[in-house]
Amino acid sequence: MTLWYAVVDLLPFEWARPGSMYFMKNALLAVLIISPLFGLLSTMVVHSRMSFFSDALGHSAFTGMAVGALCGFGEPTWAAVVFAVLFALLFNWVRRRSALASDTVIGVFSSTAVALGIFLSTLGGRSFTKFNNLLIGDILSVEPAKIGVLALILLLVLALWGLSFNQLMLSAVHPALADSRGIRVFWQEAGFSIAIAVVVTLSMTWVGLLVINSLLVLPGAAARNAARNMGEYHLFSLLGAAGAGVAGLMTSYYAGTSAGASITLYLAGWFLITFLFRKKG
Picture 1 (cartoon, helix red, strand yellow):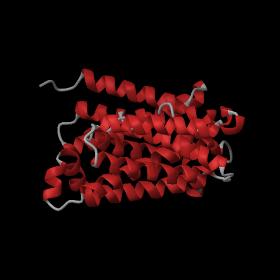
Picture 2 (cartoon, rainbow, N blue to C red):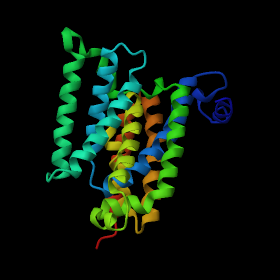
Picture 3 (cartoon, rainbow, N blue to C red):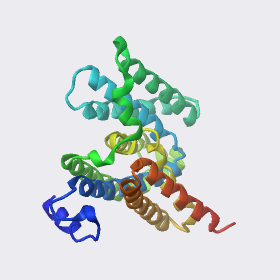
Picture 4 (spheres, rainbow, N blue to C red):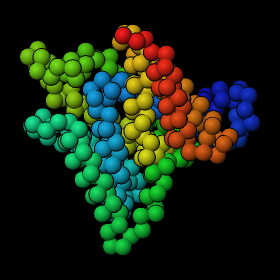
């Protein structure tokens, strides 16, 4: 972190002055790591038509937080990660063995998860207010240790993309063909789902449950409007997510708004621009 602080000290902002406002410097680094993660995963979410899957995972992560708090864990985030991963695996298992459409299965899991989370968090007359911060998030509270975890996850996701991108795409577009070519579709989908589960869970306390789904949909949706090939699709999604992330954080700091909401509005503006200038036909 010392090297990062030395780099940020060169920026022409009052919060970048040496020896001050480390919370803002930490938040900027977190955004620069989270944004590529969301941008990369967004391409697959949009391509696989799983736009509401991340929303369901957010609800399951909230339930995991409630379970962790109920069990008295000092850091309920890790309980939420485990719960979200199990939720993602169970979802993929049910979807593969059900004739129901994906959006129906997602609806079943999402509604169940949020109801269970509220039930557990209010069990015994407990107050729900201590979970209010999960709804809006606070990226200024990010800790250096969590940033390191996110950086490790980014490297793992990049490795996953590099090693199995073609298999992931074929599994998403034509599962039967992927199966016929010896690709283990279930495990490809499971790996993708676990990546989303971990990213959503760790980011939820900073971005906010109410808008986290939009961060996994808007970058890819905007990129799809503008891209002419797969390379541009990923590049535009990454650049859009990173640009909106930094702009949203700056807006949040100077206007006193929610960082998650600010980032989402910039992404919505990026989507509108790409939609208006998209190549028709």
